[in-house]
Image 1 (cartoon, rainbow, N blue to C red):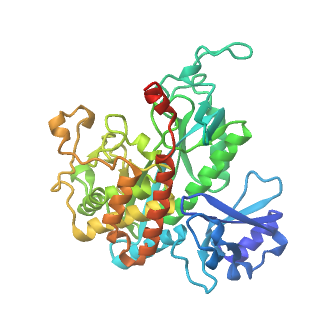
Image 2: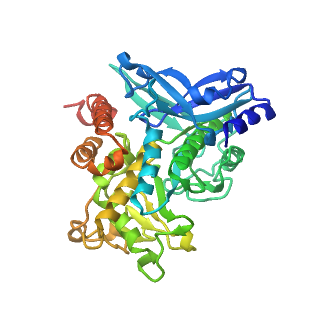
Image 3: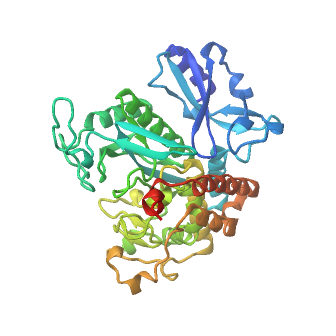
Length: 474
């Protein structure tokens, strides 16, 4: 969309405000709003200034001035504001006009540019399956003398005996019993449908929605694949709509990977493939799972670099409450066709040559999508360039249930890091693939690791409520 087209959209839709947005290191969106009367063609040349030192992990106070440069391809009308508002994603620049090397969105764009310089393909396509919970109530506190959280849901398994106004109507979702039941067990059909409606109005092509496995309102909505940066933009739009529709219904949505103990967590399975023009490069009829040699090498790169990747695709301490061996979590660094117990699954049902892809199942939605998608692409490209053969390295294929393997067989399978700090250690030891083509700078990686280690430390040094159960009577 041209600048003039954006200005025409403002006029045609009687837009009163334009919301300029950018994303921080953790993947959270921030915004500055201008009256539409103050937005003209020059705005898209000069950008919008903001204070970078007030954004965690961005900039020191001595170099605080930064500029948001709007991307005209990312605009959509905000479905929630009382005053008609147009939202637009921005890249971050320094005052001297240089792309800021800690800007996650610019890193995603540089990854796409790097792909084209390799001659391997022209575009990488991504499609995340981002799961979330919808709760009716959430409360938490962490202070000197108090540490607790509590969440509640009208459909939760623990509420079968709760006395409610007018009586308990039953039909609660059992633990691990929430996969695609109909109403009244699924009490959230309408709220998900409203999310889908607004996503469609905002430009997303939504393919389906359903209740997920866990009790207490776990949900999934799938939208169609797109190129790397556009998909990351779409995921931010998706989360924004999910959060705000839930709020409109008097509920709260969270993409936290493991808000409940003893039931499934929320992941973000990421489908990905590479094309050269209109030609899919991951398909080869008759090969294993109809995957080309290039696709197999891409898998090899993902699995080889997975411990380091996970610092970017699962970047929270809570991520590792989901990634626990022995549960239904993709902790095994192997690949398989159709096998959901493997870290990489190759979908084989009703797949066309253009739909041939790999699915990395380990990530979750605490990931900054711009960083996570860029890192996955770079790992896969490294595998292609180095011809990393996942079969020769013992990464599979594993076409049986990994959870049912003998202990001896399981010893042969690499697993994901067990903590955020272990993943950060792996990233420090294996980051060269990220700096190829100048996509990630070493400064960014060092800053990211330091930022995340502070997060991990803030959790490690706090007293956990379960410790009272274990040790108070010692």
